[in-house]
Amino acid sequence: MRAEVVVIGGNGQLGSDIVLRFRREGVSLRSLTHEDLEVSNPESVASVIGELRPTLVVNTAAYHQVPACEASPDKAFAVNAVGPLYLAKAAQGLGAVLVQISTDYVFDGQKRTPYLEEDVPSPLNVYAASKLVGESFVRNYCERHFIVRTSGLYGHVPCRAKGMNFVTMMLRYATGKPEVRVVDDEVLTPSATVDIAHHLWRLVQTEEYGLYHLTNEGFCSWYEFAEVIFRELGLKTPLLRASVKDFPSPIRRPQYSVLENARLKALGLNQMPHWRDSLLRHLSQMNA
Ligand SMILES: NC(=O)c1ccc[n+]([C@@H]2O[C@H](COP(=O)([O-])OP(=O)(O)OC[C@H]3O[C@@H](n4cnc5c(N)ncnc54)[C@H](OP(=O)(O)O)[C@@H]3O)[C@@H](O)[C@H]2O)c1
Image (cartoon, rainbow, N blue to C red; front, top):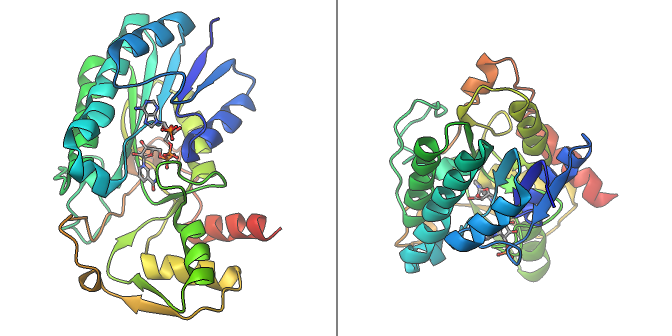
């Protein structure tokens, strides 16, 4: 049966909020789970997308546990790069629009002012490199596309790949550990999936195709993110500042990955709340 909109990864952290937000608008929407479609399988993509004949495909699927990507680069590239290529070809064949969700990790974190869409990416790890290649396949194989980079997601449905998000991870650590140490020298913008979904809806109403940064406003360290969670959820376990040097890892990550929603602002479409306001709203809903 036909569906106007198809959301891939519709039961994921971001996908589930996109499904809710778009359905509120009354569009006919099919939410696809991993069981329904395998993005790295060309037959699966061609048959499922071919049958549904959507005018808009939103791809939230990713292989995005950073250490797992490092250990299995073939799989990372199959899901994060080649999958979007198959989707781009399928969307182009139907004359459909493709939304590809990407990441702040495409940057190396050397800047100390927010990254703009025109800044040159320089991925530090396999996950980031595979997502960047996915972006370029979408850009080059599907004319009508939106590539949307976001960062530090949390929502009411935890990230399926990780089984949690940073909020639920802090809750788990605070109840299971004598103290919690969080890095204070890695800076990002925590972003609420509900805000991303709302802005995606606004964006796809336009024909202003291309690359977008889409995060909440402002920025903080992971420690500052944790501080708000601990305070608002009344967690009494000691929360201590740490450095990335305290957790040695062979995997490199950007120490600064703040994105500026510059193109969205230029279009007058940016109504993203400050990260702290969105987080307070989210935590008060959790408390309720
Ligand atoms: N989480 C973050 O903080 C963050 C930050 C920046 C960017 N992003 C990007 O945002 C997007 C959404 O992240 P999220 O946190 O919502 O992830 P998530 O909760 O793990 O959801 C991903 C969804 O995609 C499905 N999926 C995974 N591999 C698939 C495949 N090969 N074929 C078809 N479906 C597949 C998953 O199903 P199963 O679970 O059943 O496999 C799940 O429904 C991703 O593209 C990610 O790269 C995330």
